[in-house]
Length: 294
Image (cartoon, rainbow, N blue to C red; front, top):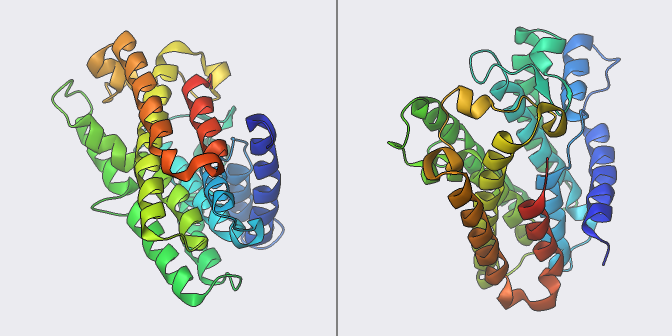
């Protein structure tokens, strides 16, 4: 098995190739819009969510060629959310992945349209994936839509997060982040099992694992926002505290949140026991999220 850095590098290479195939080329009109889409999609990042799709699919014996379009679709949805999240009406950030955010590099209108286009293209990528049966494509589309929309998806979580600003401990932080962050992470993992036609008991294992992993990702993200510099993070550090966002260290304190992350990591790893050795890469991903520095 490759080490986790090699795995992420491999995922970035093959998913970026698929994204390049699926996205309009920058030389096609409207040039500015297509350039903005590519600027945001290829700005960097570890491709964590596509990596989950591929890691889970491989755990159930599925070949990468049947996983790639869905993995790319997940990344397009994630990028759409980042573009819109960075807008002045949302978090108003000027840096993402160490580069200018889309609305700063281009303009707000183009950034909104770039996000809109990526959102639509994600579903198109799955719908047109002839490597998968039609029924599987429909199930994946429904799953991704549910993870993105309301009442149980990322968009709902973003709204709750905005409404929670400045309210201190008087918020349901677990619900906010289970939707805003966890819903897409959960789908990313489950989609690999769905494509592999895993049975319901195995999908239930992945669902529990992904719920814990999403929580772990959010807690560590909150901790990094407090403990790292903007140069290390590739985005503006300390923004959550400045905006009085609902965060785990903000609600429970830095030390308690750090211990929470360790406890959630243990639960995530333990949830994989029914899968035995086939889940070793997923365990490695858990460890990497717990110890990440950016």
